[in-house]
Image 1 (cartoon, rainbow, N blue to C red):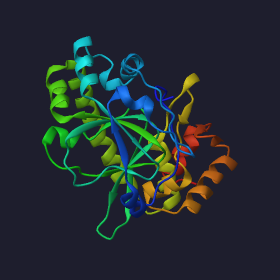
Image 2 (cartoon, rainbow, N blue to C red):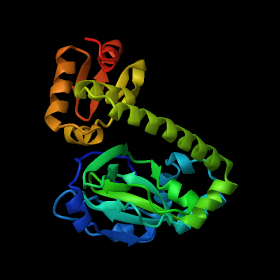
Image 3 (cartoon, rainbow, N blue to C red):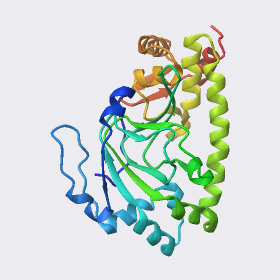
Image 4 (cartoon, one colour):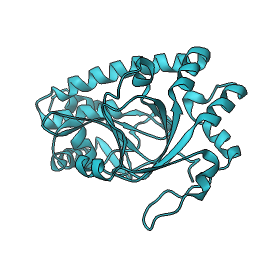
Length: 274
């Protein structure tokens, strides 16, 4: 169901995504009528009532007043994208703030020679496209669907009104931008590491978070190919590095996540110590 935050899939071919990008643009009241595909299409059933509840689960919108929430709900437009579709195109007009409601997205940049470089992953509840909204500039990167996704588009003027009139939204935007600057700086430093295994271990260090019981985990683990694309290496290299971690007892691999059993051991490998 679309009111649940779900994830998954694999890095698409950029050329195919550009050729096949397509989406349905519907107001929330009509989303329940979307057709279902023969494969893994999202099955949707959203009413105005449970949309209201769902929007309260989005961190950026969670503390809006009822009046502000009604304004947002009236302006939102939902789009359904298939896996490999381009959700945002680099260089396009930044006329909306976007929220990922279902599925998984990857932010990418394309080099002058046509190579796709993964920048970060987006999970349900995340917002994106805020820089172009704030500055009135064009999109600085592309966003690709790694699975069937549902995205909400909030018009720029409504988003700017929230930024300037809602203290909770303004505070979160500032915090998000500060974290983004730090994350981008860490990621640039990671890409400068020559040793590919060390680069993979350092990337896992960036992804890890504290889970239940104060254990360290990597939730919603990207596929090996996704990780390879993010840090400019091969899928086989990622597979070997993760296997080494499992064999050393440093991590335990579960479907879609890693449990880090030996955080100190992972840190030591990331620092290049044997």
